[in-house]
Amino acid sequence: MGHAGKPVPVPDADSTPFWKGCREHELLIERCAECGVPRFPPSGMCPQCRSHEVEWRKASGRGKVYSWIVVNHPVPKDVYCLDVPYVIALVELEEGVRMPTNIVNCDPSAIFAEMPVEVTFDDVTAELTLPKFRPCAEAGGSTGDRHR
Ligand SMILES: [Zn+2]
Image 1 (tube, rainbow, N blue to C red):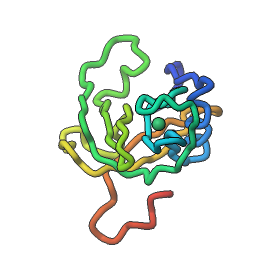
Image 2 (cartoon, protein in one colour; image 1 turned 135 degrees about the vertical axis):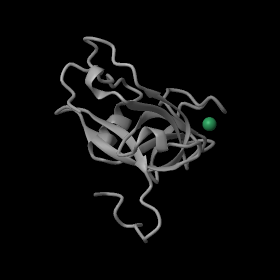
Image 3 (cartoon, rainbow, N blue to C red; image 1 turned 180 degrees about the vertical axis):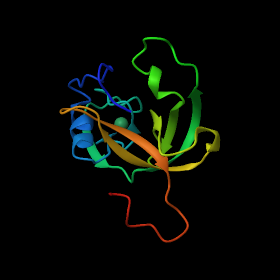
Image 4 (cartoon, rainbow, N blue to C red; image 1 turned 60 degrees about the vertical axis):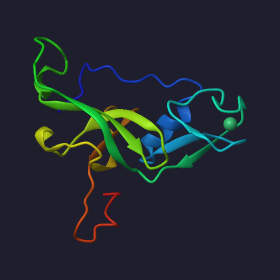
């Protein structure tokens, strides 16, 4: 699916490290430097202890499908019209945060709750990369090919 004309996220002061990580194909999760609670989306203050101290940790890239919808109906002239069917999902990462994303490389009808997924990076523009998720390459000893 091409990306021409589609809206892209606009990084702000809090989320710039996240988007920079995606650009380098690393999924970085912000966490509180005081109490260690991870959070997503990035924000300026810890909801747990109200600290403003943050640190960024590389996530495993693995998670499971928490919730999803399949978009089947093409809206005429919509920039996503030719992409249907596509999947919008909430993926719960191993680190405990939930991330809105797309599930790709998967028949939408094959998705199930808590399906194991792993991150894959889509360089949608020259400046921006979106983290998307695909079914985990399990069974068959595939631990090393996540980064392809
Ligand atoms: Zn905290």
